[in-house]
Image (cartoon, rainbow, N blue to C red; front, top):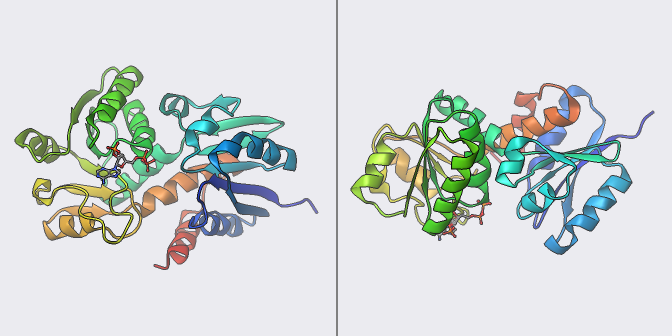
Length: 282
Ligand code: ATR
């Protein structure tokens, strides 16, 4: 009998992650003998931990905050979106070589298709918040043929920086940047968007305010929060007649692509969704 394949998640912290249950349900559904471990590692020790995982024969791993950039520099190859976004959230280890991928953008794309039936190609999208999560996903959207990306951030410089990166990645994509103030120009940009994505950390804590001024949310607008718990934004948006979705499907589909990268098999989505929901207590 061969030993189970070993996978895991590197992050700091990682203890609240639901990925072990989600990936575990996927492995079980396909009868794959594999484990998925939580691997807490402080930023200063990432390179040493990666060397340890290689030595121990791990077949692959996921990477979460705050190590996605560091991991990009530790892999031997990385797919174009991961290179451009400086973000690796999935690694495959084959014969001593590490191959890096960024599956967050795919996750957001599939979640958007599921929730709103809306394709990325030809679409107009608003990213409210331009931190690491927005960067990884916006790069994917630019590469996949979005026609316009609107970037909004409290620290406007960071939105402008991301716009410059996206201009290099996809010169044909229209880009606009705004500070998060409810001006008529910003209201107009939100009105024509196919989807508005909430990408800040506002909403992670139960007492957090609404991440987007509600007066900017027109009835019928499609709003997706990357946070996978209920947020004040989604409640406000729903009350104003918007179509809403939380970040669960993004989490599911980024994990599904990791699963496929590791196993070369189609991810068993219903089983993984069930594992995820059970872990979240939904
Ligand atoms: P992640 O990897 O989850 O995207 P991050 O890179 O730390 O995390 O980015 C956090 C995002 O949330 C940023 O867009 C940040 O805005 P700034 O660039 O201005 O810091 C945003 N954010 C965090 N707290 C916020 C707050 N109280 N109000 C508005 N935006 C906030």
